[in-house]
Image (tube, rainbow, N blue to C red; front, side, top):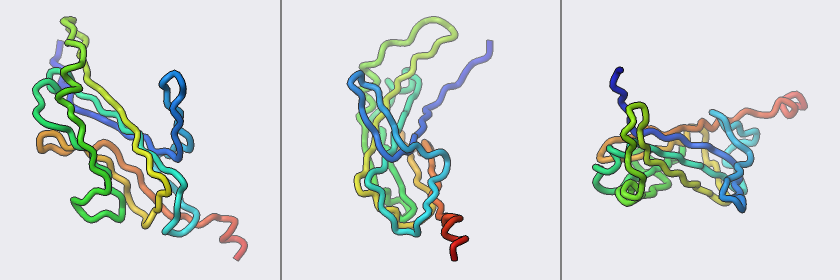
Length: 160
C-alpha cells in the first residue's frame, strides 16, 4: 500500500449573511461562487459580508506545532503584506484536545476547526481579489480567493 501524505488544508465560503441555528448548525445566505459581481460602480456598501473559514491538518502534525496559526484576509485595496484582518488561533491547545489517532491503517485523525468572520457595513472600495491565508510556522497556506468584478447591468446599458 502506498504511503499517503496529508498536508494542512482549508477553504473559505463567502456570503452575505449568516444565522446560527438552535441546533448549532449555520445557515449561510447569499453564497458567492468564485466571483462577486457588482452591478453598481465601486465604492459600494453591503449591509453585511461574511467569510466562513474551515481549516484542518493531521493530528500528528498538529501536536508538534509550536505557536499560533495566524489567519489573514486581504482585500483588493490592502497594501502588500498588510491584511485588513489578522486572527491568531492557539492551535497547540486545539490539537491537544483532539482525540488520539486510530491504529487502523486506512484512517487518519484530523484536527479541524472553522470560524465565521462577519463584517457589517462592508464597503467594497475596488475590484480585485479577496484572499484568505494561513501562516503556519513561517509557511503560507492559500486557503481561498474570491474575485470582485464590476459588470454594468445589461438593462441599464440597453436603456442608454
